[in-house]
Image (cartoon, rainbow, N blue to C red; front, side, top):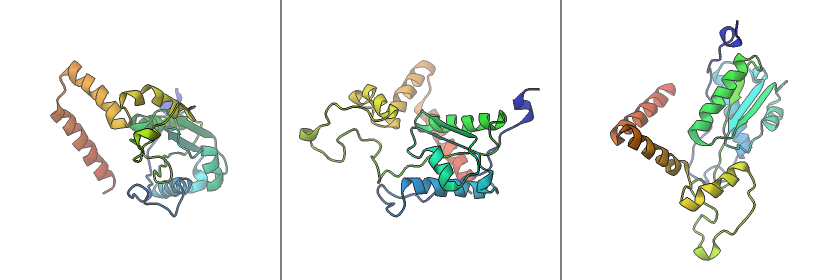
Length: 201
């Protein structure tokens, strides 16, 4: 019998922290917010934090699993992974990694997390030299500090500063190939939002 026939992963808890406008959180670090969200998800699942033995994130999250595990006081971290995809695809892949870990017996309880506090770091949608800097202070050639940063060398010169712009290209191609209409895509977006609203009602 295959492992997937013996063990099935389940999504059982959701945790989140407060939402504010950019720069609105000044009393907690991004790392602290990650810890709060993880604890909230574990409580929502009806579990104890000691039950968690796996952590997965995506898009070069600055909060490494090993440090979160230490601060959470996890007795054992049997599985940790980082999906290098940004955006919605990264979130889906991180959930898939967690499910695979559970179904393969690598871990029992895996938390998928993502922590962003843009007021403490850069703001999405702006390239280097953003925040109103003049053309006289345009960014110069520099070494990338992360894989995600290096990837922007292939997108920023063409104006792709954020996910909506990048996904717009893929969507336009889909529309050309399959005749998909804006109204059909609007229906998808409205349905996703309705499903998300039901999850928190």
